[in-house]
Amino acid sequence: MRHPDRVSEIFAFAANTVTSGVKDGVEKNPTFAAFIERAGHEYEAYSATPKQYDAFVAQISKMWASQPNWTDGQLKAITASVFGSGRRHDEAIKREHTEYIASNIRAPDC
Image: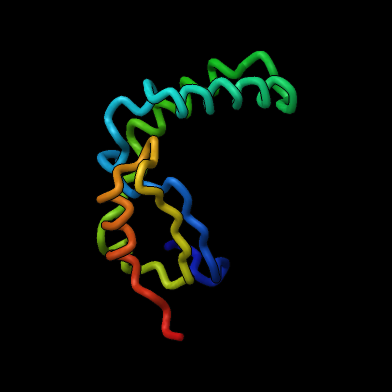
């Protein structure tokens, strides 16, 4: 949105544009919880700060609780080609939110 000259294509997976697009209780979903656990092992193996995963999760959880907050106008301003991937049974993102995103990003002229 801010630098359309730098981005020509976007792939969005499990994307939300407002916090209300995330399902309530996602952190209790077994698949999502398994992802967080797996990410912890990978963080420990590859991070420069391998013992700070819990602090990282606390920080990213705070971010997830407050961001993003994009307006319809901001979505409509996206000019890059966007390919979105949403599943009928996504663990984290509400299906209607994925559909909302798709309806508010204008398709580029072909």
